[in-house]
Amino acid sequence: MKFCYKFTQYFLFSIFLTVVASPPAMAYVGPGAGLVSIAAFIAFAVAIVAALFGFLWFPIKRLLSKQNTVASTEEPLCETEEG
Image (tube, rainbow, N blue to C red; front, side):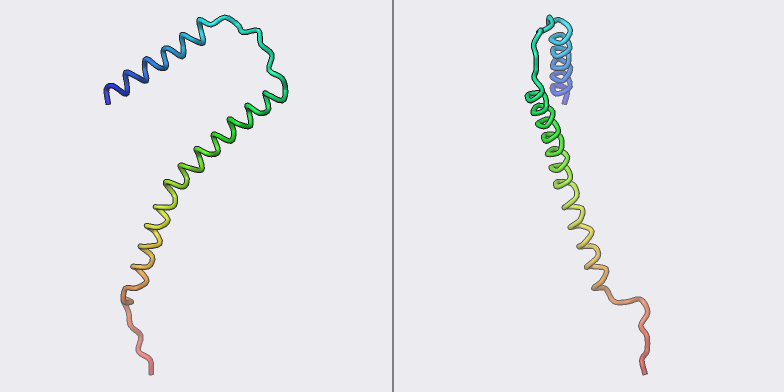
């Protein structure tokens, strides 16, 4: 766990140094490339959310449906007399 924390610290620090110490690129990104990069970022974010939803929701849903079937197969607490 300590290795992961140190690695994260070094990684974030190296990104910070790269952003701060780099000179301006003086590059132009056209509207087509900009829209494609924004769309790719949004698609990646949606894919991450969908994966988390699938990994978390469906096991919970299965567990809840299993509890409902167990509750419905139990005998009722109060029996009524017909006749």
